[in-house]
Image 1 (cartoon, helix red, strand yellow):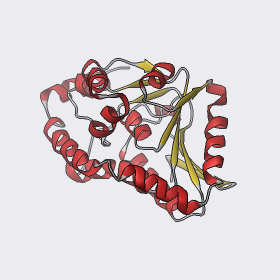
Image 2 (cartoon, rainbow, N blue to C red):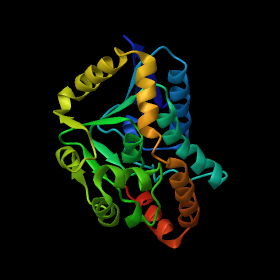
Image 3 (cartoon, one colour):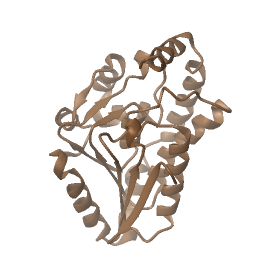
Image 4 (cartoon, rainbow, N blue to C red):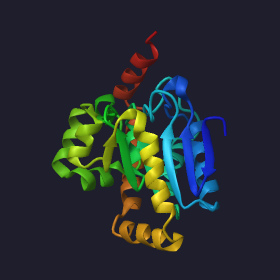
Length: 244
């Protein structure tokens, strides 16, 4: 795995997104490596997982400098599999978000069971402004977390919010100063890992049982297939790629 690192220590698995030179922006290789790491963790003896990002950001969303290749449906399904794997892991997953969590990065965080954020973290959902569709079951998870009206505000205005605001509206569980974020996330993970494993898994399964993410994922893929090759998306990606 060249774009993701995995360590397991004292019952806690830590998965690091590792494209710091691109603010951990999502490319197909990162998706593949992340899925491999999640599959490895599922079969491990870890009792809890922390998902974090190397460098200055958690994940700055899709890397618009990458030109998508191959079958669009397969690539989108593969991206959606990140949410499926996060939700399907027997271990609870804690996202530790610092810096940017934009678009797909915010969706990775929402796919986790709990979210801790640095006070100065930056969350945003810019998809609509770029002519794109949300993914990662954001269409189901976001209104559940922050309420339907606030979810529409975040998606339709695309404004950035910091970690403290994200906590206030219910997008994250708690915040911490940036230099204490990983220690707090690891502390939470160790507390979870210290519980009987089967009980933690069953609690996660029971709480997720009422959340039908599959229908949301299917709708999102359908919308993404429509928008991917639209004139609006071409204009926004061409403008981004032309930047120095």
